[in-house]
Image 1 (cartoon, rainbow, N blue to C red):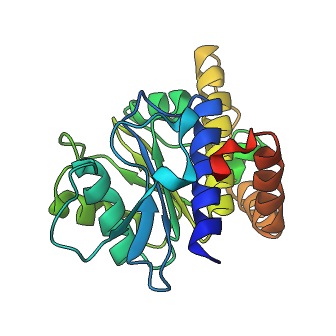
Image 2: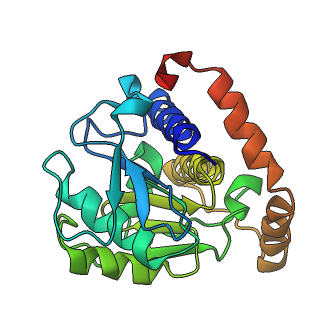
Length: 235
């Protein structure tokens, strides 16, 4: 896929994040690999509102570079640079602070229990970082997070937020969207004060496998969401 098309996809993903209220002020980041090895990637520049971001405004970085451009946030460089460098399957990296997943990350037990069909999608498929120690603004911290993520596609960042990866912008978006929906359901269930009705492991795994059997669903979902956006992000 050409860089121009990738820019359009990433700009659309950023705008969708704004539409769903996932971005915290102008502090979050989404990146998309351009090169075959994933080392070169596009990312939003520092302090830009996702709601008005254009494809032409995205920065093109090399994760193997030694210097940080002035208009790139140090936390973006630390987290996204490390993951693109160390996790080959991470073509797209979405790191945001959505309300429900972030609230879940603040619980002593941040497990996304399979309490419904959507939350079951993520059964045994979430890496959890429970060692938050401040801003992730250095190479060592980014590498630590990449190691925790490992082969999984979702990282619950304790006391922090949510990170998802995908082999495409569509996959990373769809994963993030449904995780936040699942977190909302679980947090609302917690709010009732009633005991949770958690699906058994066999049913949860069966449900997760069913989700994974239709990868084209995520592509269709992203395409539909893009059609709902104003088209000026393409310029």
